[in-house]
Length: 202
Image (cartoon, rainbow, N blue to C red; front, side, top):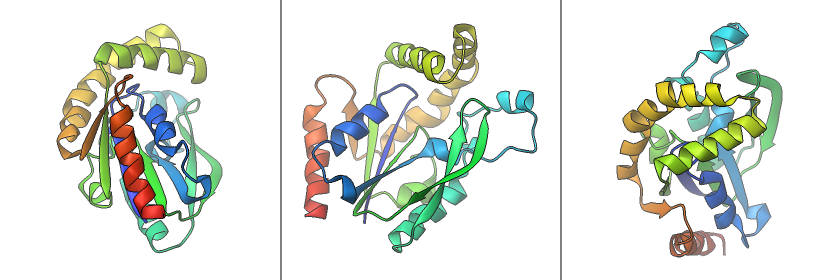
């Protein structure tokens, strides 16, 4: 199994890069795991308490479960991937049965910040985008998809997103094997990644 880690700041375009990489690859041989599914379970907290959690800090992520699941997949076993709700700030009662694939793509802002998880990646990718561009994308997404208003998104950006990016995310660029600029010039990098994947699954 080839495991590819794709990191980058919030709104950097990681999901777009994932889709570009998967384009033209056999769907049955490539799987995706999102770090967002592995936020810690917080049923013991009230909604207001959960809303105050710093979700951009590594301690908000259940890395132990994510590492365990990847190791299980490497062993050829299926896992039950959690389902997380950004509306309630908590895991739901649902899960997604995820089967082993020849290639597993793991994407998330903090996945290169955890040493044990990082060691499991055969290829480490960092998607780079300008900070203004990332903020605009985050605004659009959180308002349209996550029920947030503009003042809430901007406040979170200033108080947690930006400082956490500088402290925990941007430094992980140093661990990347490939840095992909998220603009129209990223086609060569995408083709390189695709070639690596094709070598493994053919």
